[in-house]
Length: 246
Ligand code: ADP
Ligand code: MG
Image (cartoon, rainbow, N blue to C red; front, top):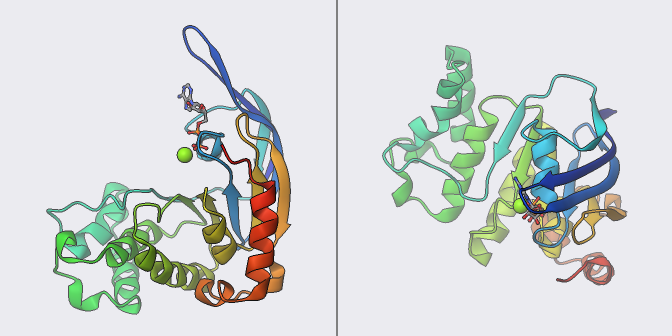
């Protein structure tokens, strides 16, 4: 079932002296509960596309159909935890800012904290956590508002490679267990292959769709397992060839 249909989106930014076209006739559907990755070189228009989806920007042309009201969870590159708040208060921050810190929602969040192995760190401060743990707190804060779509804009790019690999499995399991429709933005081919159900390959700016890759042959395997399979290498080479390296 479709959550979102995107029809013929184009975007031109007008500044004083110039026009920058950043999206060129983009159309695709987002299926419920899938993890869809948009991959493309830096500056091609990936964030522009997310910003249009979240109504932060208006398209110059085209439109977006939504099958239900979107509750958007947005996790940014930087984990954006506040150093003066404990893990618990950081996790509850989104609920408080939205004015929906009900007992039920607080319980739901505390359950996520427990389930994802952070219970003993409830009263710790972010500075005392590893990068991977901070990212987990950040994800829980995003999930606390019960989004029906999760947007991850290069969420792991600041992590070292080891944390990146272990957090990938964690994040994948959490997202799949909750069944949340997810759009991941990445310029990392290996990351895209290890986490996605489908990959949309974007050209360099202005972003056009160069191809769509279905990863159903991975049978929902965890990222760490995918990375060890021969299929991974084949698809890596295929994507490498398609990717606009700029
Ligand atoms: P990506 O996320 O793929 O790195 P962006 O969507 O951030 O790329 O940017 C695509 C292009 O649009 C870039 O050339 C960028 O400079 C330009 N751009 C992004 N936002 C604005 C804006 N608000 N005004 C003018 N140009 C912009
Ligand atoms: Mg970006």
